[in-house]
Image (cartoon, rainbow, N blue to C red; front, side):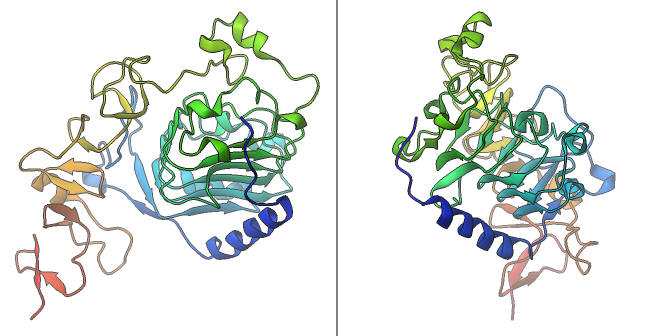
Length: 333
């Protein structure tokens, strides 16, 4: 599972620091339904249980220095951007005891952990994270765990697909269960670039015997409680429209959709007739679209979304203005 290292460790740290200077100036924008229609937000995920208000957290999210900044992830079902959790160097394990975000199913860019003290399990933070799309990568990587001194397990038992990008796990002196995870089953984009440094594992880490005793397929497991289930739609009886696994058969039981999700919570290849594409992931009716509000801008917070070119959008594109009925867009005079 160990491939070529494309970035030397010192340079890698410099790149991390540079990335932090850029992203620390960005704020995350959250797209939600208006309070009167806050039932089943515009997410691309379906689950057996749903929280009262899911969010698509639109834009990159950078969490650094303070554990309190994890509040940015509250109710996020999808992070439509990257998620960086870095440089929280004065926390301890008690800071993470009651911290968990079970709504999070998908990250569209990359996930990065770097120098976060006190965190022992990533899986406890994100127990239902199933998919990292890797639409944008960090130096060819979609999932990075670097220099995490207290981390003992990855534990992302629902993570079954990294669509694009490699995995890099290095300089984590207390991290176990690296030999019991087959990352090539998850990140298939470029197997040679996956770099998992298993030589740094503590000598007393559990072996694959733990997985075998638990009856895990292929003797693979995330920890002593959860097996690693291969991301194979046939093996898992998942529908072809599912991405990142499923919790049952059929296109309504996907963790995330390969293409689009209807209001009936069904993953489809194309939006049905008389529906419109929302945020490039959801098929909605005209009535549903007009109930949505753009809460990201003080000037537009009272304006509903409009229909334009087969999509439901928050604002008209450049060189266009809203029609008099405020339901569509027209070219500016």
